[in-house]
Length: 276
Image (cartoon, rainbow, N blue to C red; front, side):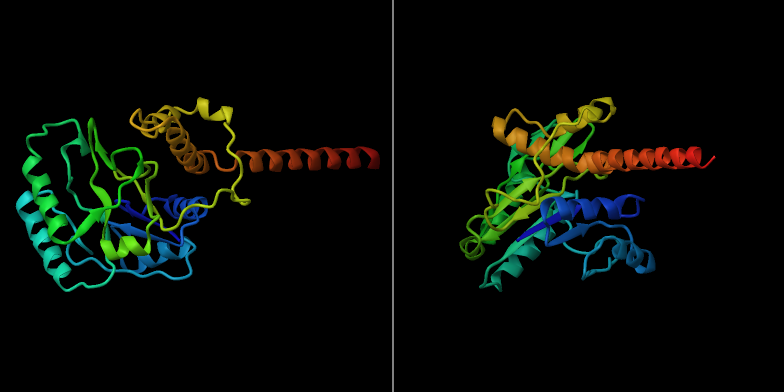
């Protein structure tokens, strides 16, 4: 089973439902969890209908928050850590929590800015994770999940207790390409991927990508020297497939459709010429 969780920072954009359908198809996601959608009521219902899922569950916001939210303020975040600790005391079954914690466990999860400012906050989060009996699920892909200017941080993650880890020992978390938000989507794969998928087409580089001004950013954001060559290739392929779908669409389908139209026009012209 696969699922995606994403702090999308709004779903009101014109192409957002199409993007969600592309993510679902590309990564065979059984469900997708969206945070900070910034819509509710009738408008939210219309957008959800366009996403193509059979069932949708909505937690309407209360004020500015609809679920767990890690405040940017350290003092307010401590209230969340205390709440999670209280919840953990009453849990005796498998438990997994994931999303935007707005906090880092370690200093190396930040690039840019002052590291001295986050040491205490990292310790607070580490203490919470330890007291709750949780462990970080790790990740593959780009090492950060949020960026603003030259500041990069890993704010989004998955945590679980030992019982959950025993049930899903092969779980994998992958940081997908950053798109339409300052947070990356997180892909959770609860079983080892199959070695071959007949429905997944082989990757082919498309020369038209080089003509687009944003292609360099796609490469830059999804190629990290900290990963192995094979991981870099895999991350780039997944990211560029999604980017290609949203920017170019299926270029081969479009080319074939144009060719069919040209052939139809040529046939029509020949018929008209013969008629006269």
